[in-house]
Length: 421
Image (tube, rainbow, N blue to C red):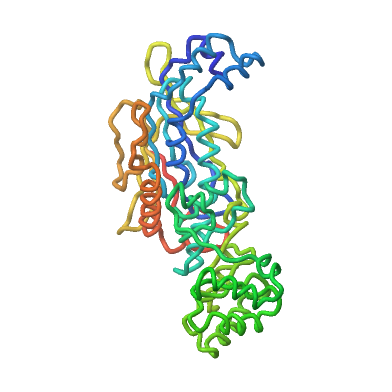
């Protein structure tokens, strides 16, 4: 497209692209924006080096003039977006990219691959956080994701309200609290379960978490307290009837005097299993496969569409796709979260005919777009460890505005409507 537009003389036309989702996945009631900080950080390194240019040349992908253009590529436009951690609904313009057509269109895959995955994970994780009812959750899904996706998933889950991750690279890169427990292989390595427990306690102290379901749970709990004492930090249950096991283990721990020892459960948990454990004496959860795969919706279904561009006279023209079942709304949008007594009541999208015109809306509410990149330079407050912490804080504030129906796990419509003005 860049090659053809350059030959046609249209590559330099100012253009506005928007990222949005036509629908929320799996009948969910809201989505959580995640990946924004990663995206604008990646943008600074989004370059075409000698290896990439040589491959494009050797395979005749673009002509020599376009190769020269790619060699000097630097995004110099502006990007606005929903602040990371913000909630989104069908049609929400979570990212608005303005620049020349050529410099903006090449960002499509970078933007969508980042936002689609991270937002899918964050949206699933947010449901799990709600289901947990304030009990801590740890992300433990690295073995069910790609090597880079595992780090991104840990970050997205943390933004959505998870408390820790087992992925140490995510801790190093994004400042996420890290945690972990021993696997069954550690117990099986030793000549006896007692040898395994003693080795772990010797290395990590009695405050560690001992895995008690390798052989017999009741025998392991008794052994764990005997080895670590009543100051044992926690036991982990990874199989069986979790509600029943947790209740029995709690009674056993209390009977042994380990009243402060906590119980954590794992074993293929999702939001429904977590909700089913609300009445059980469980202190924390470890979630793996379900969170890193979006709990059945591994992508947020977002698209990157041109909504406005300059014509041959330099005038702005709204453009939109009219394909059946894939309609889009032309014109740049100015979104507001309408609030009724502090509770979200609508996603209001004011459609501007001229992107340079002042924003106007008949409704009042909380403006949703913030400047993320100005003249090619990302806003540093949204980057790195600090940016991740800021996104987590913003998510908590945005979720607090939702009506109660938003937290039902049953399939349903978005909890607030999207209104175009």
